[in-house]
Image (cartoon, rainbow, N blue to C red; front, side, top):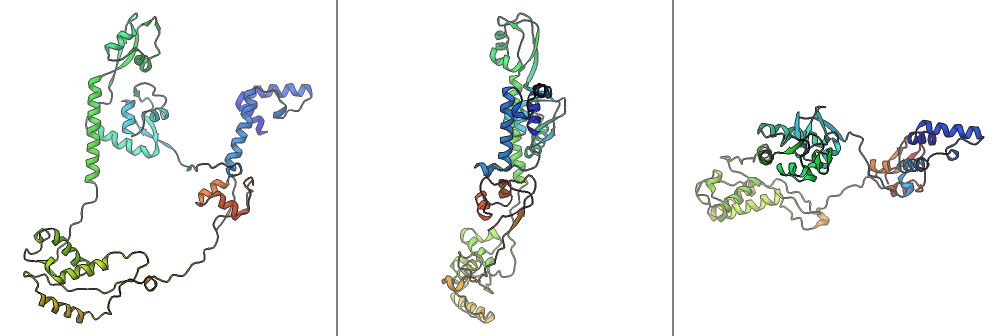
Length: 391
């Protein structure tokens, strides 16, 4: 049975086997509840089964579990021969304790990579490799600790003070030591920090960070330059040129210095029309503006009011379109859309499915699944049944 298998996993196969033999000799049942097993095992098995039941059907017990993607959490990255653990964590952009938790074999300040790799979260793998390559290009030191040897009988606190540490810190980083009354009981080799190298390492990390920011900035999209055409612009282009000439000298954008666009009524009108044609309308006001064009001649001389009137008349003749209706009535301008009938979706339950997993897969709530399928929280899903997963 599964109960006996779990019990054997906890206390050992021999332990369960002896308990079974003892019950057989006495003529007693040999199920899990009847065996004389250690108290730890008798508590372990029910707890493990309870966890299994909760995972299979969390909604039945009022529990919501966080969905976990079925993908690797960590990846292997190539490690240098020697590197400070603190430096490796910073290059991976991780907390030092998290990095150490994924690499427990490196329990000293300096990691001597006999395996040739570190384990980091998958999303940090490329970050570590690129940061390491950038740091190495700056010739930064990889190690800020050195190995020293203390003689037998030397006082631990005195040796620690010699290298700028306390006795407790030396014991934490290099110990445990064979000591007697605060002295080394034998010649001992351990690691101590090098202050000069640590300062250089910090400076190189700051330089690496600044260089990385500079590289990411230079790799960003370049600002698009505005083309200036010799022909007369129309629509949004005319509005943009008027807006720019109002705040800067026209020569900045390649225009003639004699253009007095802000003073011309026609150019201001073109700017307002083009802005209304280009800007998105507010919600509920979706009246389209079509075929709006204003022929504006940008010459070397200012445009007079008389030329403004003649230009308006010529524009009206060349473009005999119906007048633009202002989108002031939402009832007229709102587009008529047909309501689509959405058919409910169904899902066939497979082995290992749970209500919570199905709800997460279709982005719905567990309560909705229970309501749509008339299920109770304690319902156990049967393989092959169809569940309604949308309203």
